[in-house]
Image (cartoon, rainbow, N blue to C red):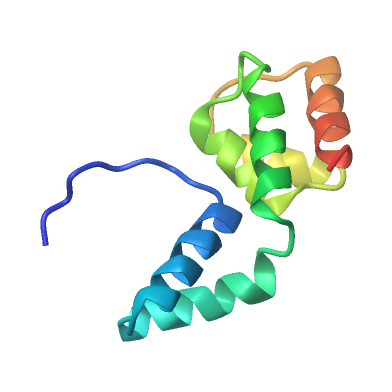
Length: 107
């Protein structure tokens, strides 16, 4: 198997891709496991998640990886958000963290 391209996607998008592949035919063991886990945890529809990702992309300091993680976890408070953003070395102001949380709450 050759890797042609690579990109970060949300859990909701991955679930849609695997469910479409499931309809086409038999999947491998790992793919079946992945789709079962995603069915349990990726609860929001991919169209809503795509809107959230588009809104988060408007915040300049956020990196693609952070945006995808925020869209997957949907942090409810500043502590949850700090746990996501702490891995990167970008400092966010109080206003920026509030903006991110408000954007997530809209979904």
